[in-house]
Image 1: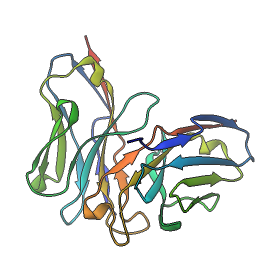
Image 2: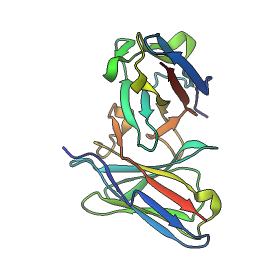
Image 3: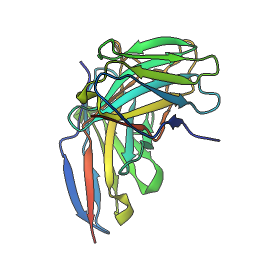
Image 4: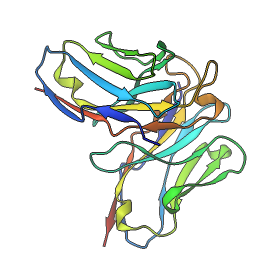
Length: 119
Length: 116
């Protein structure tokens, strides 16, 4: 069974540009969540999508957005990039359903991440 | 707010020695707890998880963790460390409220170095 796949793995962008990152979850997983990892702030939850709807959102500015497609693949977008957006962006998937979340005892699996450098 | 604390930023142990990485959480009810490992340049790999039941949890790569409600701890242990265990280790709890509900709150991580 293939794991969580993220593309691209590495990218460099300039301040003010926007970026789109892609994530394909494990087959059968309908929940996709995104996390940002930086040396200063550590791992922080960005948002979670389930059935093409954002189910939860962390404390990030509106420049960070995402979406999920009918095949559960997800993309996240960061607009007007800032130097502080340089980070490893991790996508994770889990087998959850309506009303069934990690609180029900499911496991979340992470991809390898997308390394974003803003210059 | 819920939080996870990993008191040790960096630990160095000799190969073959035992290991204990500390994790404390703040949460009123029974938490769902995880330990993940991250090798340089890689994503997160699940080592083990605790949802309920037996408080001593066995994981992959010879790791185990013990849930102690009285101490709000979920420490990770390994009896004999191998050089390949050098990595960063993250403890996490499932958030029970707010915007992050149902998702993970992570500790800051403990970097493990292994001496030959």
